[in-house]
Structures are given as C-alpha cells and as structure tokens.
Image (cartoon, rainbow, N blue to C red; front, side, top):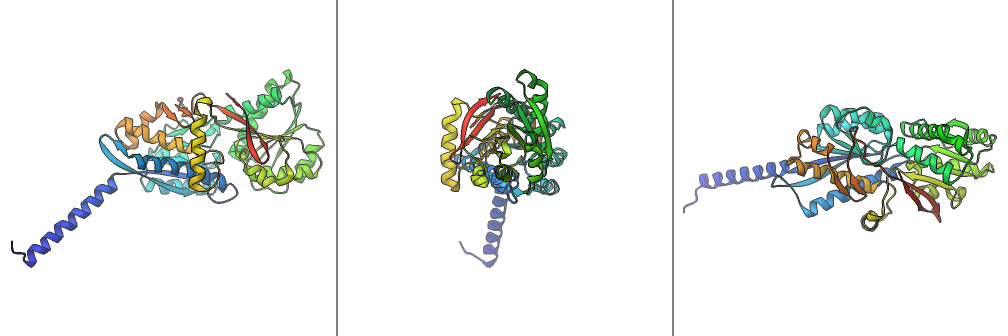
Length: 387
C-alpha cells in the first residue's frame, strides 16, 4: 500500500477522533460521589475522619470493580470543606450540584447538613449524613435526605436514662453551645430527665448556654458550681468540652461530665490534658457495633490506621457504609441516575460494616443504636450498646 500525505492525515484524524471518543466514554463511566465535612477549623479532625472513611469505601469499590447493568464504572470522590459554616455549606452544596454528583455523603454537623439538604433536594440528589444527628434534618420530609446513625431523639434519651439509672446522678447542670446539634441534643436530654427523673430523684439544677467557639467558660461554670450538681451535661463539640473540663478542675469541682458524639473521640483527653481523669467523662456515639460486627470494625480500624497513620475518631465507619449504601442502591436500580436509584435507596437493606442499613419513612436509620463510652489512659472504653 502506498501511503500518501492525504492518507496519513486521514488516519491521524480518525485516530484522534477514536481517542477523543474513548475519553468521552471513559468520562461517562465515572460515578461522582460528593463528601462534605469541616476539614478546616476546630473540628477538622472529625471531618477528616469521615472523609477518610468515604475514601476507603471508594478505593475498595474501585479495586473490586463496580458493575451496574453490565457496565463498568469508576467511583470518584469529590471531597469539599464547609469549615462547619452554614453559609459555606450551601455554597459547597451548589458546587457539587453543578459538578453533577450522583450522591452525597455529608455534611458533618447538623448546622451545615440542614441548610445544604435544601440544595440537594432541589436538584434531586440523594444525601446520606454519617454524623449529623439533629431531628430537624429528616423532619423536613425531603425524599433525598437520609441518615445512617441514630438521631438526637434517640441519643439524648439514651444518655439521660444511662445517667439516671446506671450512674445514679441526682443533680444535673446542662450546658449547650446553641448550635442545631448542641441545643437539639441538650433539649432531648433535658426533656427525658424532666419527664422521668422523679422515679430516680434526678433533677436539672442549672441550665446554661455558650457558643461553639468559646474558650473562657469560667462565668457559667462558677454559676453552675453554686448549684452543687453531681454531673454536667454538655451539648456541643470536643473543642469546647476540653477547656470546660480544664476549667472545672481549676474551680475545684471535677465532677462527672457527659455529652454526645461531638465529644466522644480520643481527641477529648488529648485536648483536655490533665483537666480530666479516668472515668470522669461519659459520652455516646450515635451508632453502635454489636457482637456480629465487632471483628469487621476492628479490621477496618487496622486498615484505616495503616492507610492514614491515625486512629479512627468517630464516624469513619459510618461514612464508609454511606458510600457503600449509595452504590448498592445504584446497582439494584440498574442505574447511577439519582432519579432512578432514589426510590431503591429509600427501601434498601444494606448489610454494612456497622450493621444493617435500612431507613424509615423520614430517612432515619431504623433501630438506631447508641454506644456509651468512657475514657481510660487517654482512650475510649466501651461501656454499653443500647437502643
């Protein structure tokens, strides 16, 4: 065959079109899943924890290969930082919508998850939060909102019952940071004590407020000390819980201290230093690992530390399960199109790392567990798994 200049040019053109077509096909075979948390600011260690958990799921899926309706896909994680700020959360949410993500894991806090959920609902994009516990999130009745942990209506009462029945505290001071998460948790805790505390002789003796950036808590702690409580309940995050513990010790009343998932990681003893003692702090994670899942979770923790060089904080496993749940719904629906797999997601029965993931009519996880912890030698120690 004689190769003319015209023949060569035509061959090159066809080759270029083929490469471009292949690139287009490859781009169409990518499923984009967004992840949003506060990966900067005072709770960045918790936000990075869920992002890392989501990355582990994505890496595992890509290593195995994801096939939907006979077609191979690659999962891409689009990770964004909302810095724990509600305004930034909506900006980031719109960015992910514009990027045409097919699902979202996040946001991290209730105060960011709730406003962002309106953006995803408007775009018809399913969202699973692995950490935001405010009931307000699912009470909006958006069909795109899901949560794979227990909510504050489960967490607050579980903590209250544990405080009254197991710890047998009688006089409780309550402090919250006025965020959607902190106030919501404290309100649910307080309602349970007021409703059932008469049976154990337990009362709320002081109610105080702070904010999520406070470091000087001497004034409210002095007021609390005057009421002679035997426990402080705090609705808020570890960045405020730690200085509160240090200042309680300085004021001479290092009494029992209880809180929720926002202060339930090994970061609390690290941040509080000698301001807390073994067994002083009791907290709860809005989720739980029962006997059947313990080995799987331990294997996950080992793999996580090997990959990232740090221990799991709190919700990495739930972020992992959220990604896996989204992808299973896509596979069962035969499409990654949100409009097609959303109805399947609402009825999913996913056998996750941390147990079965199934949602009620609001999008809350069914039969949500709560794990109670304390701390010894700077590390969490599991006390009980309750409902």
